[in-house]
Image 1 (cartoon, rainbow, N blue to C red):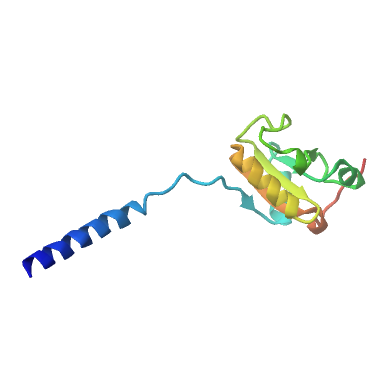
Image 2 (cartoon, rainbow, N blue to C red; image 1 turned 180 degrees about the vertical axis):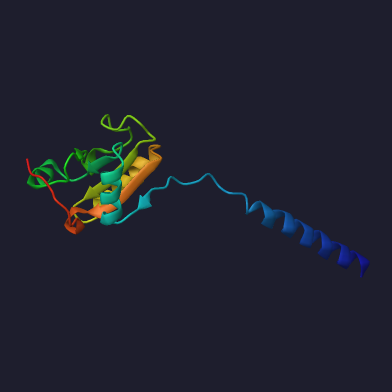
Length: 133
């Protein structure tokens, strides 16, 4: 009986030790924030340092884009930081047509080390002015 109790106590102790290890946080995955068009517009209007990035194609960009947006097509963001975005800590607002490519680009930029990335979806949902080339 004593041996059985001792064995159970040892097994419980081992279980507690290993379950405690599972609470050690893993290296944080790169993160970006999803925001609304209204939040993005407010940031653009109140923070001169914000960089707005359009990740659509050049043709889509020329049809209409947010004023002062930098064109960096999603397909060109691969494994190096884009030369148009030298500061990894810059506040970057990303959009595309419908929200799919902006999410992909936000994930990729975050993985490349950018720390202030905001995805506000698609220009289809942008109720404010745009400009054409």
